Image: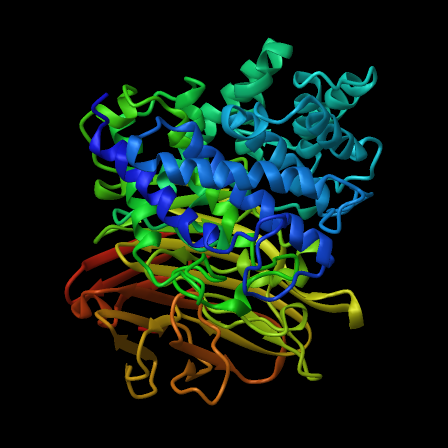
Amino acid sequence: MNLPATYIHWQDSARRLLEPLAALIQPGHADLDLHGAASDHDKQADRLESFARPLTLAAFWLHSTARSEDAAFREEISTWFRAALVAGTNPSSPHYWGPDASYHQHHVEMGLMAIALQIAERDVWAPLSADEKKQAARWFATCRGGGIVNNNHLFMSVHILEFLGQAGFAHRTDRAVITAHLNQLETMHRGGGWFEDGINQAYDHYNAYAFHFYGLMWAHLHGVQDMTRAERWRGWGKLFVADYQHFFAASGEHPAFGRSITYRFNCLNVFGLALAEDCTDLAPGLLRRLCTRNLDFFLSKPIYQDQGCLSYGFTDTFPKIVEAYSCAASPYWAAKGFTPLLLPPNHAFWNDAEQPLPAERSFVRVMKAPGLITRSVPGGDIEILNAGSMVGNTQLRYGPWKWSKLSYRTGVHFTFAFPEISAVSFDSALTAELDDGRVYGRHSTVAVELENDHLGYSYNLGFKTGQANTGVETFIFWKDGWLLHVHHYDAQQPVVLRVGGFALPMSESHALLSDPGQHLSAFCDSRGSALQLLSNGFTPGWDNRLDDKSERRHVAAPYHATPVFKSVRHTGAGIIVGVSWTGSDEAESAPWKITRSTAGELALHHPKLGPWEIRHWSLPALKS
């Protein structure tokens, strides 16, 4: 068979990721000795993760059409995964992984393994002896009755128990548990194909990473068990994909947003599954362009550690950005992104002509259920504006700034703050600093307006400790690469407020920074950031990393420059109005001039972009 070039490209991309893993194989062992920090789970969990996530990558590759030049490598890796599975599930082996337990990470990895063993059944599961299968099934069965976090983790018991039943090891109560957990997961659907992630309360990439991956994969592998439910999940998948196509720039890049961004191209899995389950009307050629560009975007970046394996980070290696639950093997959840290899070589995905992405045209996409708006930005970037995704109590330890920025834009992304639970980064945000040094950004949030030209949300800068409370309503409007933000606030204690612009990522520490004034700008590496305050009473300044004397904080680059305006210490109510920009055309960064301003109406003029008129009740009268 003559395989399409794009199909071969995806196969070879998966193989290139497998090769450095194969170099770490130790016969008789049930894990891979990947370099990287340990998780906050335990050593056994990290060992299992180093098997389960590479197994998922191998499963998609082994499932794809075999080519003669890959025969020896296929045999090498399938032989090791079989032997490692036997060793890891044998209680008398020194390489035993140990059983599942209530709320243990094993449960998550076992669910992924159950899926992988079905995808690679021919090469990994089927060749095992009856006794070996029985031993592995006994180990998987340790999941029965365990406590599970009330979020997407409920899917894991579903997939484990379905796998055991399909393999001939069902228990009479399994179907009741599967039904109960699927029912509970469905209560997390909030409309439009969007799921709120249980106790985490968030809407972010986990909708693709987990909910639609596990939901559509259940329909793919086991939907015959409950056709009505399977169709329901396919319907949700169809709605979600229609939205999610708008999260990708013309380059294929997506914005860093939410937790676990080190999973990188994991986000693609929903597109391959939607096509496999025939639950999308989107053109296969458009989806191939999107998926291939995203995959190639990341694989072309310096995202590999010293062993040649995937590293911690997003567009490069940056260990500090991973959550405490991550270990050295965690980045291999990116393997889920290879779901297109479920599609046969003659599928339209591999053969139809490519079509332009939404970001290559122009769009604003309003998503009511999660309180999100995505929009295209001239030049091919896209932006996520978040009015509704919570920073729930359980998410604070991961860093509230992963959800609470004014904007998440490709090409620029954002900065972190350390330590996560007690620090907030200033870029693309309104923050409040108390007298005791605590700094707060947005936590809980409620969308109050979601329209094609603006959004608004209500929130608080503060926390229960000390009853810290600065209530805020923020409204955001946009034009080209600019955002206009209006913040109505009321501080119950003395605070110092800061308004931050986009954090300009820099590969070298040589930014051109403007002098302090009501308009701040910075340029480096063919991109700039600008912030202009239209209201009065704030002092201009910078939040930068321009050398190696402090630790790196930017998601996408070792150095950064962030324009910031800072208030005096004060209490009470006020209104802040500012405009922020990022892009590559320096002429667009020039300051705006107020030509007319009354309460509820603002007219601006820009030397390149021309007039911008906004009418909204939140606008105060400003001095020209």
